[in-house]
Image 1 (tube, helix red, strand yellow):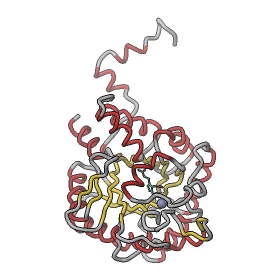
Image 2: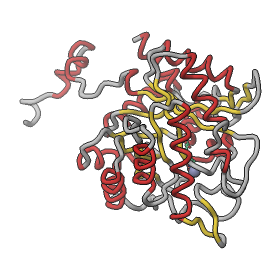
Image 3: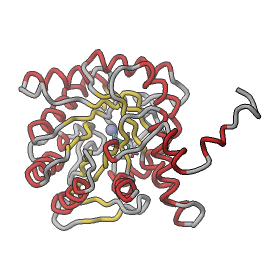
Length: 325
Ligand code: PBG
Ligand code: ZN
């Protein structure tokens, strides 16, 4: 096929042709909205680096989840901000912890939306690491039980799905086992399988107060240079019982999303992380880009790369756009 016999522009000449040959479609069904929940009543603390996002007390959280449900968004994922932190992150698996209470409230008061919980310790430990510390090192095996207990406490509170983001080896198996032993064999695990050690998490850590207090996460999160390893991580999590495989972040890792989609036979999620959101917001605030268009193009690119679902801080705005299309 060579010019002038073939002219790709023939099929681009009007909207109807373009619609007909469009290969990728973004849908409200693809969106998962991340939300931050904090103790208190009627709290709505703006997160400066994430315009439009807040630390929400449970009453306000319920309102936002209702809004998401009204727009047809299928799921939210909750991140908790506890009042107190300690070395073992006990707030993460406390029966009356912030996420546990939030899940209960949302499940009681909002219908037609799934509540996913992020399973990790970093928001609850005083040192800010995703696992337990022993001699200044993150102790993998000692962390597994705490992570499993966290997941179980979320399931008991009514979570529809748990999403371990800690990157400890073996945690999916441990979580699957404890869920099964406690009659939660129907609770799926969305595993942050290929989670990279990324600087794009900066705004999130400010929002969740979960920055490591010494060193960084490079001994457990993946090296941004690696992609074969992402397949290995995903394969391990599948053998351990993961139901959905996540790649995170999304935009600098579209090649990883594409590869995982080709090589892995489970649904693939991509996390359009905080820094990716903030950069678009900041450029839009300066008037340098058209926010709505860049948002939609960005989400479409993640879908085109192969994601079946997208965790994104743009979920409400994107759903609004998709509804009015
Ligand atoms: C906790 C967690 C993080 C994110 C999701 N779960 C932060 C981190 O690993 O430091 C990042 C989300 C975002 O940046 O939007 N482990
Ligand atoms: Zn963590």
